[in-house]
Length: 187
Image (cartoon, rainbow, N blue to C red; front, side, top):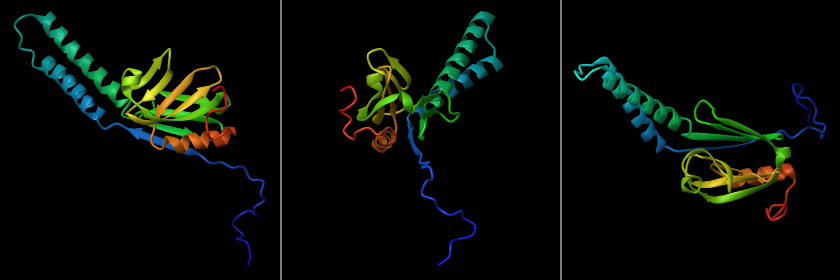
């Protein structure tokens, strides 16, 4: 039996470049995005067919109000329709929405613990999106369900709702050589 000449011989000292990825989506927010698009369309319709006899000020206030509300609803919801999490040997990276913004990168050297949260709800964090609560830390919440909770070296926490969060926690603990119970570091 001969080795394939196109492949270099295996030495056993190769680096392990495994990556864990996770995603979560919230289809309900598409309804809110559609409502934002409707407000935007109403504002444009008012601007184009301005047959108001009451003056320009009420028309401008209506158009600006509808367009502003529509844009806020549209872009505010589309930014958090989904979240993508990627953990490699160096860092955890979170990207929100289809454009990947907002984005957060946390070096694994700053992580002292990782826990699985079986139930994270928008109600716990005050709604969907990128959230901060002084008593809880920071979170990216796109839907209700399981989540990954990182304990950082400065005492803060970072929570992400993501599918198969338990596998992500195991991957991070393996990378950091943490015990599987989660009861060690600082508990």
